[in-house]
Length: 242
Image (cartoon, rainbow, N blue to C red; front, side):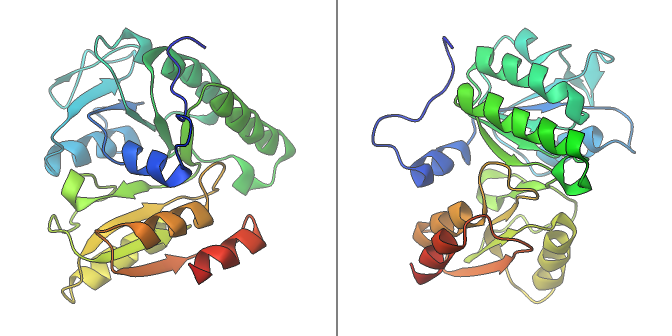
């Protein structure tokens, strides 16, 4: 579709991932003023950690979220958006991807759960449909059912009380809860992180993508991982060898 982001000729998945990890403008779709909502917390994290790019909350029920002008839909945002944090229920994602295509969004982090991890046939089908639509539009997905990216140098976090100082340890975690436990426990022992990626269901980017990426990342010297299931065994072993 016109305006949809695509990988350039010769551009590797690693280079594409490096690009989307440095967003200049982020939207939190499902942003909220209610402290019980994930949309509230992810907006707070961008503010609390001093994210230097533009922040666009999206929710048709608010004019402002945490003091920031809020837009009814992603397509209503006047500026460009690189990266979207999706905090809305799963049935709304196909429409969101259509808006993302119009805005030239490169990547969507799907915090959204209740998809393939439930084992329900309808949820598994919806997740496959989401991936198919994202690929059609040239949009990459992190998740679903994931906490996303903790990247201190870019001031990105998915929880409170994470260190703002970067370090040499990179981590890929299928479990969001385990990743938060690691970061907090390790930080008490003086360990600092380059990037921690919680990737959940791995509908698009998976453990091998992130392992390949961290292996060549100049900010990372040590890699930790917690993996509950491997998408492609042969590729995973090749990534380990690298």
